[in-house]
Image (cartoon, rainbow, N blue to C red; front, side):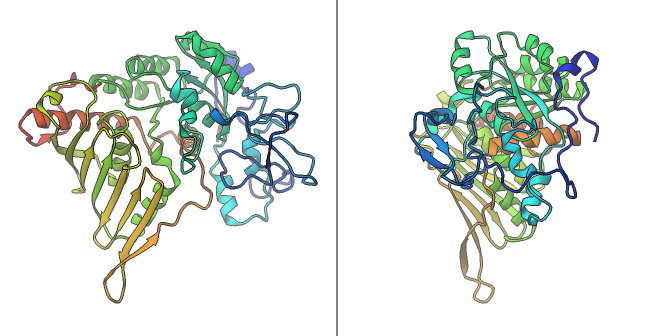
Length: 472
């Protein structure tokens, strides 16, 4: 696989481009597990123990920045975990998290495995991107940097969710720069992640820093314009948070610009990469619940913003575009608004699979639930993706039988997996897990549900003819 090519004027920036990851049979791999991380490989910290020793270096993870780790006595010479700094180095730059070999610490856990490892670990190693890309965040606020501060006391969320630390933890990419039109955000971003290449102009950043992959975490209002601008600058991939934008015309322009310039456009609806849902899709494909017929979702959210996660996930499970909807909004007054509002509806996909969707603005998130119902069983996700159940039939009595859904043996942050997936999409030349079309369909369904209510709860066929319709 040919490495990324930026042209001669960018060659000086591409120190790690084209570096092939180790393969089975390589003889220069270090010993197994000589370095472990306390980040994406949750539950496997390689023998680290907590300490409050002021002499130990900080682990930098959102609001957990004051937690520190060290190896127990006799555990070997290595003392740097995820986010710990070698002496004299700062936080977050692509060099801060490296050994003399130049490999990211977070990658070394899989790159350091000898050929005798089991098939499962070999699979992890083989999912790493082929090359290392130069990454940047555009939007240094909540989603770009600080959202994990909100997840304290919620251990069922595999951290990180913020794009900056997820990019730092992901294999195949380095966080090298960030941009935001508000320079007041730079001090906190620099403090958290050690990134010093900070710009108020994303165009200048892309050109000076030779950026390959951009995590776009701005507010929805400027997102379409920035996406088109990034595509014209020739970045390799854009990973845009939800909702995609405000109007269908903006969504069309984003997708068209990326297609025209050969840029991967992926939506940051990271549940599409979450290991439990990946397992659920595999079980459905293997016939564990029979052919998928119906999907049911209750979400404590509005239709366009948080519900974009759900609609993108349902589109992935359905395996076909949405064909028509019927919607119900709580009041006619709400339905007359162009704001992002809650609502209820039915979505029918081209292959006949149906979704029943209920979206309410509640005061807690733990009512978020999903059901995937087949002819012979169902898969249930409860309490905001914290619990998963597999229901099948007893082969003798036909009675329902409940088992715990087999989880991923190697649970990781879905945002980390998503960013790695975007890097692999560059190499494959196509994004399939959550492309821009999924984001546009999520926005279109949300708008169509409102339009159905406005038309007396009538069926509304997709795609909508009026591309100027707006939500948010």
